[in-house]
Amino acid sequence: MPRIYIETYGCQMNVSDSELMFGVLAREGYVRTDDPDAAEVMLVNTCAVRDHAEQRVLGRLGELKRHKRPGDVLGVVGCMAQRLGPRLLERVPQVDLVVGPDGYRGLPELIARARAGDRAADVEFRHWEHYEDVPPVRAAAASAFVTVQRGCDYRCTFCIVPMTRGPERSRKLPDVVREVSDLA
Image 1 (cartoon, rainbow, N blue to C red):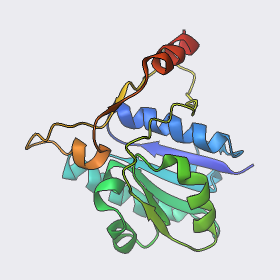
Image 2 (image 1 turned 180 degrees about the vertical axis):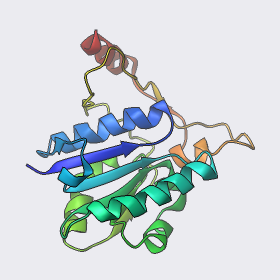
Image 3 (image 1 turned 135 degrees about the vertical axis):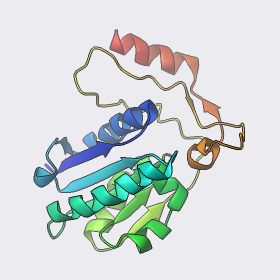
């Protein structure tokens, strides 16, 4: 079974998204590891709110490339991936895939392509994507984040969320209630 390592930067939405990615990949037989040396796939879930956060990620990618063996995959996912898109593949040659917040469902295919040598980016907004059918894989904890909305329709001058998370869309109430009930 292939092992996956996800390192998360930024807000609680990114923590929730990392749990979703573990859920998507668990369906394909991936097993979570907290050790990048043990992983065949390393993903860095990123923040784009401030330049400092992006600089930290770029530095960390340089460190993670030392853990990468032939056939391993190093990917950048999340808001920074959405903001920079395919330019990130040009800027950081050790990165194999770049995936924005609406592309996590396609991770198994993109990882397979990357293993075959095809570096790829998926930063398309999918207005229908809520991941309602993907059960998050959470670490054992006394609390959990439950996403009720993705994106934002406001275009505040100072805020990057609409550019990185897309337009506002809410989950259906029964789905939110089901997830909360499952947690209780």
